[in-house]
Length: 73
Image (cartoon, rainbow, N blue to C red; front, side, top):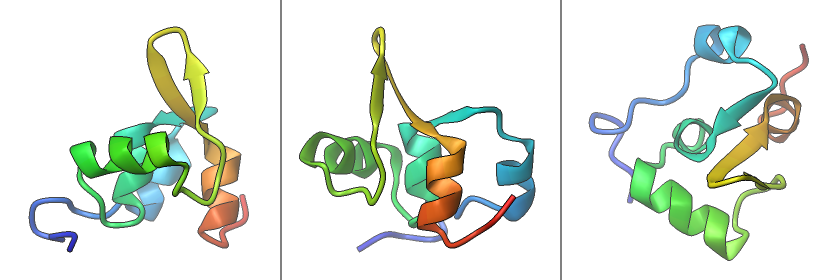
């Protein structure tokens, strides 16, 4: 079970300041997940959005994250 004290959720302000993409741990924080669990979710396709492989980096389009959270820009 996610621990909000160890893994503070992503704030609206952080999401507003994000660029076109965020890394997997940042996307996971929006769902109360820590870094390791976020990568597990990404590998297993459990996130409600596509995770893109960009070189050695895994990224999520900020627009997709917003849509999954029911937020508009």
